[in-house]
Amino acid sequence: MPEKPAVQSPPIPNELRVLIVAAFVVAIGFGIVAPILPQYAADFGVSAFAVSAVVSAFGLFRLVFAPASGRLTQALGETPVYVVGLLIVAASMIATAFAPTYELLLAFRAVGGIGSTFFTVSAMTFLARKSPPSIRGKISGAYASAFLIGNVAGPLVGSGLLVFGPHVPFLVYGGALVIAALIVFVMLRGSRLEDRGRRDARERATLKEAWSVPGYRAALTAGFANGWATFGLRNSLVPLFAATAFAGSGFVIDSSQLAGVALATFAAGNVAAVLLFSRRTDRFGRRPPIILGLVITACATGVLGLAPEPWVLLALSLVAGVGTGLVNPAQQAAIADVVGEGRNGGPVVSTFQMTQDFGAIIGPLLAGLIVDHFGYAWAFGLTGVILMVGALAWTRAPETLDHSGRPAAART
Image 1 (cartoon, one colour):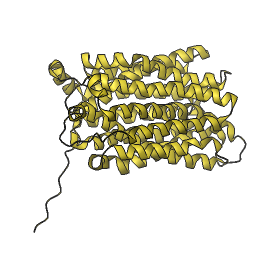
Image 2 (cartoon, one colour):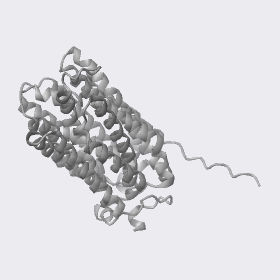
Image 3 (cartoon, one colour):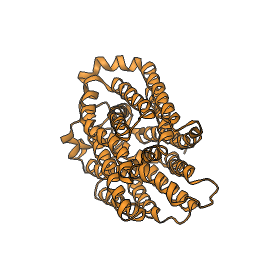
Image 4 (tube, one colour):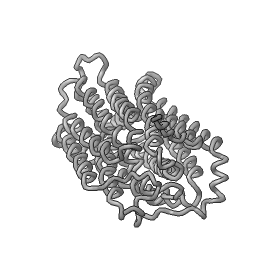
């Protein structure tokens, strides 16, 4: 008997490809400043807690303005909110480059958090609404890959830009965001005009409906843990740990550059996992890679503060990056499963983003306090426990993947 031809998955829609390109531009700029910002804040002569507060202020204002971003996305559409968000962050980065005091640096980063939640929530809502159910994992993986490849290159570029002065990386990031805003504004003009006429007729996914789905509640728990570890503690304490714990170690690169290499190594692990496994979530489900990824990240992060040598720090960063790369695309696809194709899920997405940002806020603050009183090992160890709690939540939730395209709440 002749073999059945393989089923071809549909291609990624062109409008989503534009958003993926923009994600790369945003990410390379973010990667440039991520390893530099904690040291930039520390130059004002403040404590580890105060340095962590710069990261947390960004997350705090993302949290506070997340509900507004969800409502604006429903009222105005995704692409206008996305463009405005990018321009707000660009302005905050340029202002950060010339911050004369620690207090103003904190204020500029807070304003950047407002723009960040605008473009993050609108992008996730756009991806969820436009992604065909059969390739949600593939699209989430492509979006994550673009972001992560930018994060791999960004820290290396940022470390190189330091030779031109501490202000230059922030100016480059601001310029990259303006470029990304122009790409989206010009390339998605047709989609923006088409959506404007249909916006009021689109079915909306409600938060009450999403809360009835166990997978959504598990995603909120895991999102909090991931925000704490990946977007909070890693960006605030890993650069400080790398720069201080291995000063004078005689490693092939000095301790200040080690911070950028550690973040780039983490991002490289992310990219490898996303490229290898993200598409498989469209066949085998979202739940297995999320659980496995959280456990791997928990183990690698939990012992990071005990790293005796720089190469051990880099190896653990790579492993943690692989774990996070398993989690993020699958979890984003799970949120899209909850929303359903063609539906506007602004409040559902913004609530998930709020939970993740809440972790990114209190994670660096509590970890900074722990470092000041007990040391890095305890701060990273607590983070490992938090990640394990996220994995446990998903072990109690059923799979969200369903190839029929029906929203998960309808199946529940």
